[in-house]
Image (tube, rainbow over all chains, first blue to last red; front, side, top):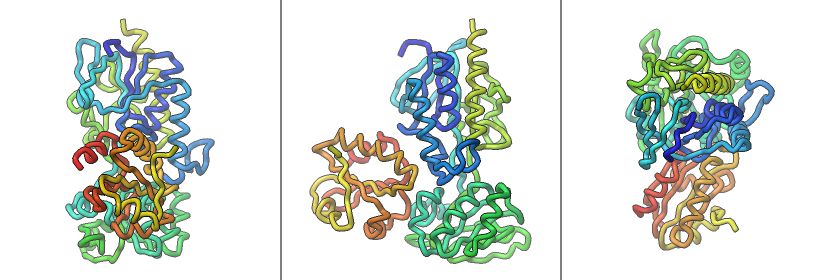
Amino acid sequence: MSDILDVVIIGSGPAGLSAAVYAMRAQLKTLVIEKNPMSGGQIINTYEVDNYLGLPGINGFDMGMKMREHAEKLNTPFMTNEVIKVDMEDKIKILTCQDGTVIKTKTILIATGANNRKLGMKAETDLVGKGVSYCATCDGAFYRGKTVAVVGGGDVAVEDAIFLARGSKQVYLIHRRDSLRATKILQEELFALPNVTLVWDSAVEDIIGNETVEKIRLKNIKTSSVTELDVDGVFVAIGTNPVSDLLDGIVEMDNGKYIIANENCETSQKGIFAAGDIRAKQLRQVITAASDGANAITSIDRYLREYK
Amino acid sequence: MNMVIELTNESFESEVLKESGVVLVDLYATWCGPCKALAPVVHKIAEEKEGSVKVAKIDIDQNMEIAKQYLVQSIPTLLFFKDGEVKETMLGLQEKGKIEEVLNRL
């Protein structure tokens, strides 16, 4: 592809797909590069998205597919590939992909989002898929009638606990603080469940198990006392890490490696824009990701008009 | 014609264990988003590898026995069989190239 594109959108979650819709409608020469041939980003793991305006209770996967259909209806070109390097030649950005493909573009919109943060102990890695999970809706069925722990205090952790409580015998929600960060309506639903127990002020010190998870060791942060809890599964929902390595050293990032970009999604590097969960911001949700995608293309369109 | 064979607890033995050569088995459930995302990738592999690799799927909701037998507690899981034995396991949504890499190794 020797042509110079107007915009390459990297990532195809809600931010990338929203941007694709705006870019195609603005008739920009667009390409979306995605790691996996199906998009949706993190929401495809969500059983129910209940806070997107106009679509209460939609299944996360269905929502992702609807977004994809919308982008496809506008003939958005998609490419399954992974961008591994970004070079700059004057104003042109040169992207090198894993399979050696080189793409030239006037602008980049990075929308690679975030992935699950890990607790960080060795046993966690060793026992993934053997009791340790990052997706309650995927793996919940294996814990019917069993005892599980969910770690975290945000929306995802509480949603996971509610989801698991439907089938599991007992759910423990383990949180470092003495109150939850999750939306009030979710908290209310959680507190009403008879088989959910909250374990406050506690951090998971270790996960113990031979073939599969058998128990977790908890430390009370206030009293330093250590206890063990027998569980069959541990669902980790302690937030996300940005997938921003690609632009390390190219654009400014905060301490957590989220890309610093203003509301117009402009990064510190001219011609590079950031949208969705990868951007340093207060609230990471589908609605803010979709909003970023729209704003970013508006900025890109303006940038291209002033381009030469 | 569907090139991905739908397995059950009952057909598992004849279709997978007694099969000589490579069989790729996709353990999934109808309500699992990443499983739905993986399905077209598996389908594509079945299409492209027709004749050399047998590709099958099994709904764990209807057939929990098989999942238990192979200690699977997470879906989607891909099990790579060769001559009736599990040689490799892959958890979660996978890229097509990574699956092909394993198939080529077997």
